[in-house]
Length: 301
Image (cartoon, rainbow, N blue to C red):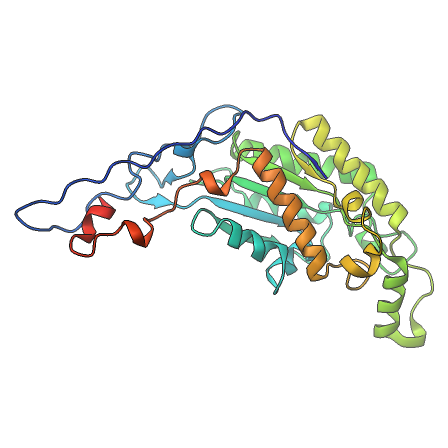
């Protein structure tokens, strides 16, 4: 389930024509591919167009492939494991955008605020074209339980998310920003996981509950609506499937490969609804079928 933004449809652009080779001989290419296609990002809150998927670095002719940054906690940190949703995104946007993982296991939104200026510097030459923000599972840890130092009150959680989003908008007013709610919690799964670690010393009371995770998910969805940005409601989406507890969650909190597949599918849909469509983005260099074996430099002019 997604809460798509209200971005206008993306307009596709065509690749620039190839230049004819010199009859007198070949010279090394001196112009970057897509040089006629690449301009700076669009000013104003609009959907990215084809000519805005690539940046010029510092006014030079060097082209910078756009980035999709995944910012979150351990569910993001683990997203490049086999079957992970981050790895699947890298495949979806292969040769179109670099998917960069900035996941920090155990972090809540309060601690994430210490990172945001380092990961997304305001003076960055090429800010991300899109960013996912996936926090809340640790903020929702209960007071008086083993994870209480991670707990962040829900009103502060919402405000922290808002500050992160506003900082990203300061970095780029055309960046696609997607909020992702915390996932549901399988409390029995968390208890089994605790027993596997601590045996008889494991606490009987869960450090997280599905009900509390749902409260934080609701605030995340509410903020996305207020700020008019896309939101992936993983908490609700996963619970639409019977047996979600064991199917989607490996330890009552973190994702199985099936759970990762759900996140990937929903994030791709949210990005597409916001105009970040892989099939409409140019390759950073030509497909091999476009390279003439007898005159390869034509493809790179």
